[in-house]
Structures are given as structure tokens and as C-alpha cells.
Image (cartoon, rainbow, N blue to C red; front, side, top):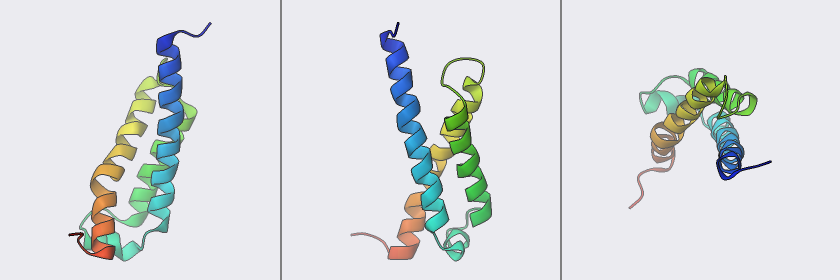
Length: 97
């Protein structure tokens, strides 16, 4: 029987897995020189980080024995989305006013 915390964790798992897939495909679609222009790691490094993070989100559950790997994957994807992605967009499109 599902209880409220089980439903919330299931929905979080689904939403963050989709979020991770978006981050990985965004990392794939960016130019390699944009990563060096923002003075972050290289494109292959971010592909590994977002790909590994997404794999952890897809393979592990937010509750149970693998929850630490799920959390690490979530943090990896969030770092890309909050720190790297906006700077990539800015360097490729220019600053927004």
C-alpha cells in the first residue's frame, strides 16, 4: 500500500530522473569550446558527470540501500544545471538584459 511519503519519493525520483536526462542531453548539445570559455571542466568531463549522475538517478531509489548514490547523482545534475548551464548559455548567446 502506498503512503504519502512513498508517493512523494516516487514522484521526486521520476521528476529528477527526467531532469537528469535533460541535463545530460543539454551537455551533449553544447560546443566543446564553450566549456573552456567559461573556465570549467571540459565537455567530456561534464558528460561523464551528468551521465553518471543520471545513471545513478535511474538505477537507484531515493530510499533504501542505494539512496546515497541517488543523492550524489542528484547533486551532480544540480551543479550542472545551476552553475554550468547558465554560464554556457551566456557565453554562447551573450548576456541577457
